[in-house]
Image (cartoon, rainbow, N blue to C red; front, side, top):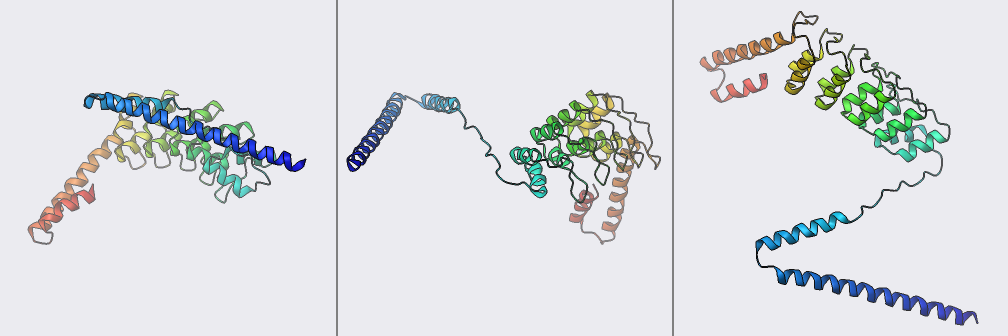
Amino acid sequence: MEEVVQWAASVMDHTAGEEKKAQAEERVRKISSDLHCEILDLSGGEDIIELCKRKKKIKKTYSPRLSVEIPVIGHVDTGEFMMAATQGKLNVIDKYLADGGNPNVHDELKRTALHRASLEGHATVVQSLLEKGADINFKDRLGSRAIHWACRGGSLRVVKTLKSHGADLNVRDKLNSTPLHVATRTGHTTIVEYLLSCDAKVNSRDREGDTALHDAVRLNRYKIVKLLIISGADTKIKNHEGVTAVQQVKQWQFDIMETLQRLEKLREVGLVPPENLKRGVNSAA
């Protein structure tokens, strides 16, 4: 009796397999037929273009595969937790914290998972860490908070997430740099614009006495210079060397002129070949 049941089951499996194979072949024939008809209907280049557009449109209607995170089984150690923050692996983060892990554990530079996720732009991880006890004001060895690292990374979504959880947009690190200083130096125009829209202090000075405008001028961040001036940056503020942002431009121009004159004199006496003159100017710039 058991052998008969097994035989019947194998027959049903074979039949089902044949039916699926037949259905697949029929779909292939139908697709081939449709494509053949479309090709026959083409009468010129415009039809080819239209066909390409239709094919692209069809592709867009397909539902993308959802990325399903595999639940983490087993213990997650501190090293794996910190790496997960860098890589944006939320499932590993959640498992570590669910098992009672410390959200404020840090590396040798006192950088926490929140610092790492903020730098790398993992807004979902940042949100999860904050909801589960991560200290938004935890300072690393340089006195940088998560908001400083977010401004280095350039993710507006992360900066907004941190602000919504109470991050101070005017907080300073050990170099007296504010998030605005950091965003300016790293050239993240969108972040600078957002900070200014949130009334970040535009004329704050760092340990060298430089404002964000000093940094923007020195680093040739033209768009940021414009944003800062529109937002009220004081062009007359002097740093600890007694130089304003505007004077930095003049100093840079003077240095270039001095370099040109020096190279020209060397060329005249034959110490610098003419083709090296331009190269020297470029390196000075």
